[in-house]
Length: 270
Image (cartoon, rainbow, N blue to C red; front, side, top):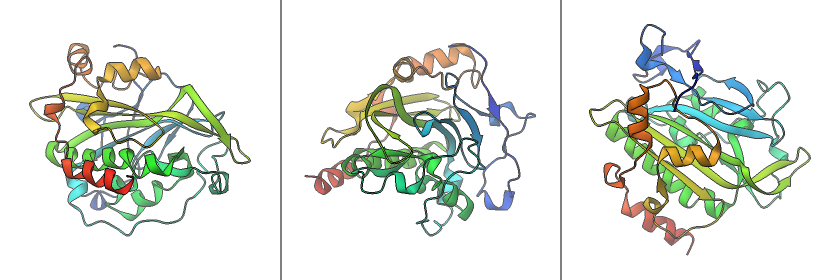
């Protein structure tokens, strides 16, 4: 993998609210927040995540953020309930009403559970630019299970780089609402751990439908997700040889899959 990686330096962040979150600076390259390449969408930078907004599809091509153990150790703030348009999107984001009575839920890309460490992060997670249409049985099923496992992995590994989104080039089921929000057939997540001695990565591609299949059976290499989506997720974040080593293989034994979460999922939707 090669190419120029755009990176975003977080701005205007009150350090006391970060729960140990290290503000990335150019003086510390390991703390830069690198963004994927390959999208023509409008880059939007919020305090706790960035995204590339696809106006034609009325949702993000991807959302990228860091998740840390320090954030997860902070007491959870009250869950936000109000979905908001993202007024940072110059062409206007989708609206709450686009999803109403559509048969699809407003599915978080950056999960509210990952953003529960302070009020601002939680509110940002409810921007409509962070939503994509998902079946409830997918959103509350295997997608939720993956989100919960990733929080466990962040706790185990101190800091993870995560990119997630719909796959908008590989099948659109339909469009909903006045703004014609595309309903994706597939979703992806990629997770990178480069903090510990054993650097590793893992990727997932899932259909927007209920699943009774164990989560680890969806695990694939980051390279495979890149080929499927057309994005290059972590170019220049690490050296090319290390990137190729991490992204070309996956070992599910390196990641703790919670059997109870799988059982809970199948109990809810059986």
